[in-house]
Amino acid sequence: MNEHIANLAKGTALEGQIEVVFDASAAAEWSDAFRSGKTQIGFGYGFRGNLFNPFDIIGAFVNPDDDLNYHMYWDTSAIDLTLTLPEGNYEGAGQTHTMSAQNWFYCLNGLAESEGQEYTYDWGAGKADVEARIIILSALEELALQTSRTIMLITDAGGSFLGAKFSYFNDEYNVFMGFGGLRYIVVNYTDAEWTEYVESQNGDLSAEYKKSE
Image (cartoon, rainbow, N blue to C red; front, side, top):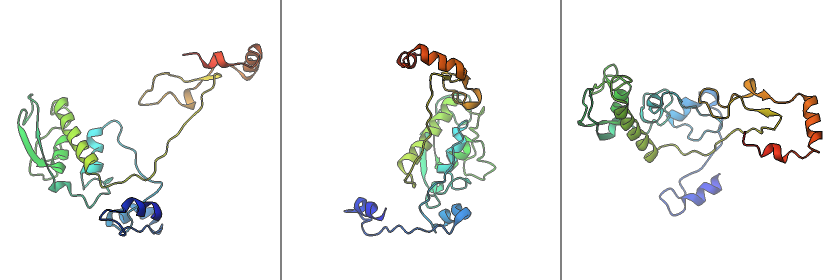
């Protein structure tokens, strides 16, 4: 890693300033160590976003007080955003507002007043038009993407192989249960039936795998 980072940093203000040292002493306290700057790189951990509430999980990136926010060096309470909200039947509709990114986040979730923010608009679910909430969310996402303090070093993914002997419960992806998984998988042939079928095809299953359904 040191070799590759050194090459990446050549010709920049960071040249010769970065050294990676292995230290796993933080163990289960890694999050506190990360927030305090004792460790700055972590492998094999992370978190999954709140898939069903993007208005909330964006706080992991733009709200310094969020339990999942590890970017302690990025104070979004000091970063102003100016947005013009669409017309509608909600507080502040059709107006141009300037407030901190953190304040925008709390307004978006109806928490601004309880969190002692300067501006206490309640644009939580059901309190503001969806269009307005999406505009705010998009602006916060753009800010996080453009000014991210995190560099992703690794990623992982899962894969599976589906044979003609089995079928997914559903051919269309469902956000709650994917394609059904092993629990709902459909077995098209018993072992005996499968052996008989393969023999009937002279061992050539190319037509089977070309089926669209």
